[in-house]
Length: 321
Image (cartoon, rainbow, N blue to C red; front, side, top):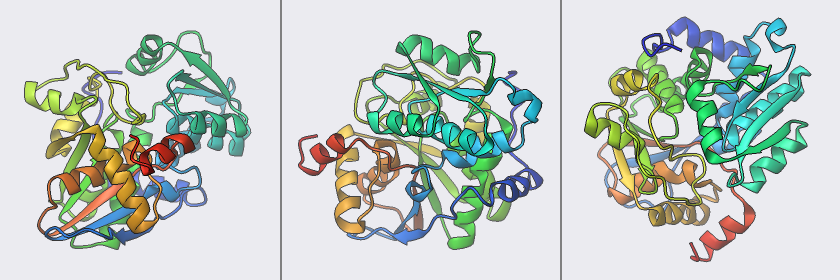
């Protein structure tokens, strides 16, 4: 894939994605964040309420639904810490095609169990080989179609439907905060917002366990960063993918880094005040908003997923993490 080929999805791309995803995605609610006492207003876009518990049904779903069936004759596969794999497994079951998900030993058990429940095969790899699949956008050992949830234009268009929904639900939104994993949801959402309401500030949140976006903005190009293991499985790559950097640099206004402990605090806040269960990556935007004391105007935190292991959630709620 050439780094110069990626562009924001067009209005036609986004509308086509919305039409294709109609029966498969949930138009998730937008609710006020309770227990917030800072300036302005903070809202939650609850993508954890998608059928699979995460927004990835939008990206993977649009990709598969717009792929020639002949290209799926050997099935489809992806490399994922969990949610993209779950979206692939769920959509593949709907479409009647085989699916394989390449994950690592550290992938959350709740996500892997859900993937297997949908009938997909889970293949565990060491972290280095797994990351190479993502970097290379494919795996020579697998004859199927690689479903790239980050860089595929169809995936970006699917993610853009989040931005369109936010603009429709909160027309005077000022700021949208998203977690940073690979940049696909941030860039897609920003493109959707730009189509309906240009000028919204789009921020990405990272934990101090890994800061690839912040490092890339500081250096002016993707650069490798150390990754400290944590319960935050859906964010924290060792480097921004080179193909994504031009889009990220164009569409994302700024980054925020918060301690892992603040993410745990955000999960507790969401559970206690909104009765919302978020996984680590899904709570990152809320952690950023709370850590900064909030922002003027109206801010939307996209809670991208809620697939968290029960024992991890219990430890967080008991303040053991």
